[in-house]
Image (cartoon, rainbow, N blue to C red):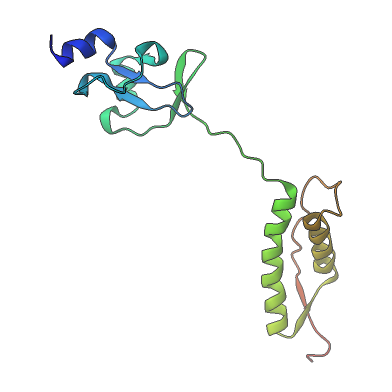
Length: 147
């Protein structure tokens, strides 16, 4: 018996997907050895049509086996903690502060309130907010000292 015969015997479907999400792909009949290959009963057997739909040998379509069916894979949404969002918003605030200083302007009352709200979330003193406040549209006003 040849290695191809052994592969065909062990992997009669030829094409397989792993049970990972997203899944990995195997064209089992292309291997020159069975060493290190997973057992067929730990994989999802694919039809030739399914193999072609995912793009064949060169396809990189993200898919997963869900409830016994091969489906397009949608990565889970990763929730960014509010405190992390606030820390990121502080970079924008710092940029605006640098611009205001360079132009001899000051923050509007809305911007000052925004800075305080973001700081409270970022440093942990505000533990009740569930979303960041909206960035103010009016950030700077001309300083009376600059006129």
